[in-house]
Length: 58
Image 1 (cartoon, rainbow, N blue to C red):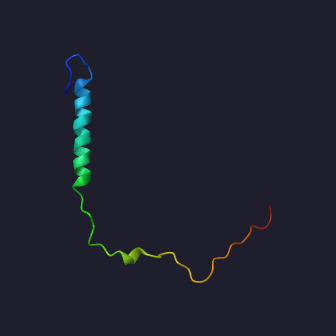
Image 2: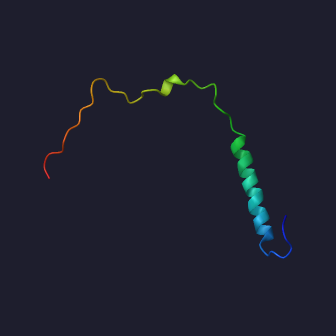
Image 3: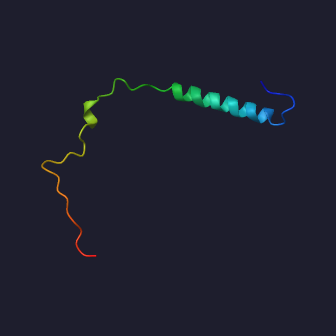
């Protein structure tokens, strides 16, 4: 697709090739479908009702 009249054709081709490599690298990872789902639930849960306090002073 590079046009002979475009002086930046080689640069555009290099960027297109790099983008394609990046896309391929992103899709080559694992899905982590076998990970335990319940282990990260409610990691910051505190018992009882939440209390809000006002700042004192000014």
